[in-house]
Image (tube, helix red, strand yellow):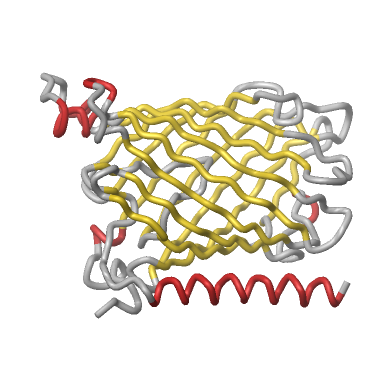
Length: 306
């Protein structure tokens, strides 16, 4: 087990070194949630698709599928993430989640999940085509959370790839405000019986601010002008021996509202498999863009390119 941990630690350090090496080649400052005229709103279920200086917090509640006394009937998570850019293209994320689990006839369990961190490198930024591609590496530290709420004693490392593509460069009229974002990763557990997982997701977005500013100015109320309807899809599936894990899939239709340096989003949670849940849940998020709200302090990269 010790050798496996050393191997995974070496892999993590190696990928981080690669990200730092790639970043050393980049000398042009660039926006992190934007590609040309396209602003990608913050997502709730999916990780953010690029590095940035930001803070966001969300709450998620979901009915589960109980099977008798003492089994979970509802899960509620309170999540907070702080993201910091190290350079113009490289950033880190630190995430903490507090969980509450309601049980059938057996009270409530609560506690922290494992500490989760990640690094992201913006590898491609194609402004004319509203496209970006990000490489990421996520690390969950096993044993840092409470077992009573499902935190695993085994950690996991997840190489990731993210993308965002707006359709504004295409001659498709009122469909130009559409954008698609997504990610895929391989969640490799440190030890058994925690299974390895394939994880990923997609979003479909329609930006009304983009419609107003880049396609056609429509006579809409001011509140409507700030909305971006979107649907997220998130899944995970066992890769190799499942150890009892099952495929989960979740749709989340909702809407995001953008203000000056902040966003608020609300989405319904619709399970697409029995392992995901037994009814519709809800999630909401507040997202603060520190590069806008505090550009000379918290919103600046620690190491700026010359």
